[in-house]
Length: 240
Image (cartoon, rainbow, N blue to C red; front, top):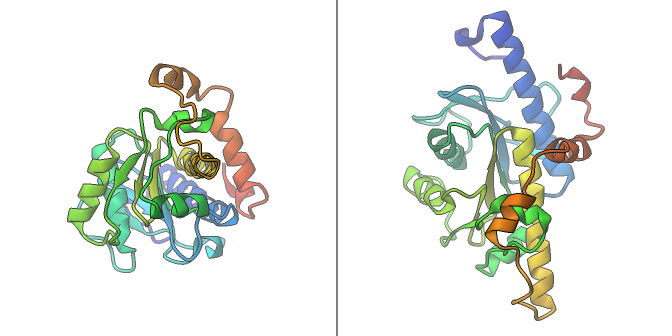
């Protein structure tokens, strides 16, 4: 799999194999859900020093068994890794509990981002972004460290940040959770666009105290979304 000497121990090797499999499954799931297309990427933390990122191809086209490059949390990106993976580096460096990151461009999200707006917390899925989704007001691609720092500064403590006219980034405790959060943020944008279309920009919102109570992870909330989005993937039987 090309992981290098650091992962020669059998247990570590098996962990890396499973993590790479999960990363490929996540990439294809995001593609099937229409949350990415030619562009987008996802990653999973290995440890405090490194993470795996999906291959630099359209995510739905990631092949079974394809190598997921190992990327350092700090330092230059390896050859062939997309420039915006700097966003992943910034999240993993700042958030010790972050285990997965998704950069995506769902259709409702892109429409709202092009309007320079952030969805408000109006329904249950939105509560996982309390107290608000972050916003980065710059249309340029994030291909240098300075912009990557700025985007994640704008993200703050939120689970996600929208980049004006340029999609979003979400972070979860695991990559499957981050995939679920991407779906949730896309649905937040759908609801927000519906409110704007109905000329109801002041429609009810969920306030912080209620939102924090609603944002439960019990009852296999994220596991069920992962099951839904990854259903039928050819590599699912390979996961331990």
